[in-house]
Length: 452
Image 1 (cartoon, rainbow, N blue to C red):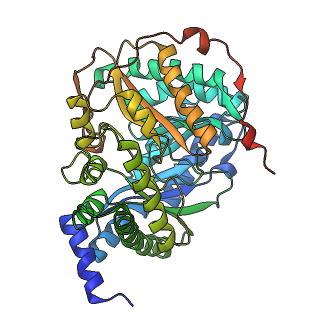
Image 2 (spheres, rainbow, N blue to C red):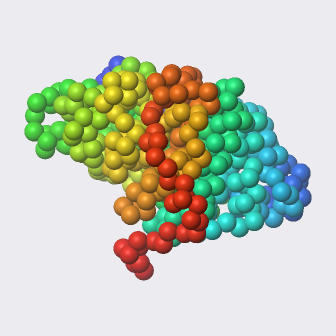
């Protein structure tokens, strides 16, 4: 039984500390939609998505009203299009992206993820078609998100794909330059991508998943920050216990919402992703948590240790609260979506190099990082390669969502709006990595990957 005290405590988290369910994401398999004719395939995926997700948004709204828990986003993830559409006789999947966009608009979800490919060991014909379609697809659609997994601990790093993604990101930036290159905010490059991630832009429905499933992503950085105020000046053991207890409570809220959504929609419950994902709102910041631990700014000496402590104990608390914790689960450190991170960049405390070091212990990687629009494609690829190496060697998920904002330079501000926020353009190391990137081929998997 849940006690009266726990109910009041949860209400306080929601009303005063920005606790929310960040997303209910319905994963939908498109494998049974395969067809050689592109128009027929597009009709099949539109019909299946609109049928399966017809009541998703209303169900989320009804649960939010009944339980008083804000559910910020309702989203859909689908089978990677490079796989689902591989049998289509076409040299472009842009029309598929339009079909996904229409379906997302019809059911009212915020985003639909899965315009994706898995190319960590090489590209099939479908993968090549998808990669060549990404820039145009993201420039012409509103709700479609794309992701490409180009590395893994088991396969190594596909350096041809690393080079190609630098080109694609630059092309996407140019095609959406009239909107501050926002197309790049809907594109993630992964190492070790999880198949059950409910968070955009990296969500897709894995081939090992059921036909349809409900995943929930919970977020509450404000709750953790408030909890840590109660142990200010205490030792690290006390600090860790407080993070774990708070993560446990947050996850339990997500568990209730996930099970209720599953029951009402008649769709199996997949996972709870307990990720402390910030928003631009004051009091909803990962950076503020780290500052509460004793840092003047994120980026100060000790930042990586503080983030490691936070990430690990969030996972420990979440795992105790649900048997189905999955996805990314931990702390996100996007730049534009966290006002504390933005302040650290403005103050000169946080550089791209320090941010990269932090990604060794966070749950994702270089996320929502705006850089100068004249950054070379090879430099973008070099940044991606570094991040993929961190994920591959450490056996963790890492990702890059980087935005070269055409027409803007270091120190200029860029406004993306909504949850995507705003940020200053960050400085990029000016020295060349061109010859390294143009070698081509694949960096082999590390020695510790050979386990069977």
